[in-house]
Length: 162
Image 1 (cartoon, rainbow, N blue to C red):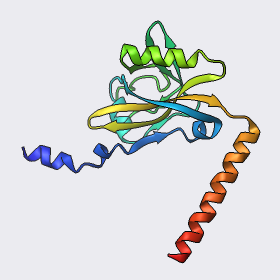
Image 2 (tube, one colour; image 1 turned 180 degrees about the horizontal axis):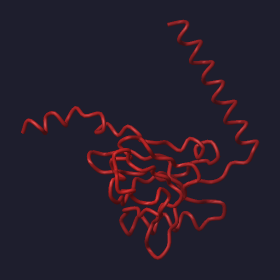
Image 3 (cartoon, rainbow, N blue to C red; image 1 turned 90 degrees about the vertical axis):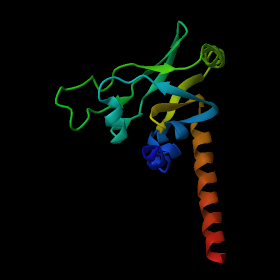
């Protein structure tokens, strides 16, 4: 019972992200979000807990009723002497059949794809937040930057007054 009380206050339970795909949030407009479990091998879980993951250029394929995460890099665990798994191997995603069908239906639209937005731990399980996204055009990206800058300026002004 004592162990459970100690684990309750653990920071990992708060779903703090291990890695975030900031480029995807800039390059794409997020239409929908889905949580999926990650299939990991060997010491990949420990490497993730060390924060040794990278989502740049990662994407999701949906074929034959299965979802697979491609292009995600998990560098080897620092204390693993065996050499471990290849860092950019395809990783399975754990989703319900109905969720996979919904994702396939949404991504059949032109210009829509599925990319990982972040990876985090929910309790002991590694999870990936997937986004159904549509690519932004360059003028849309500039508009987003303007909106962010305006929001920052408003926040600065509000902080000065408070």
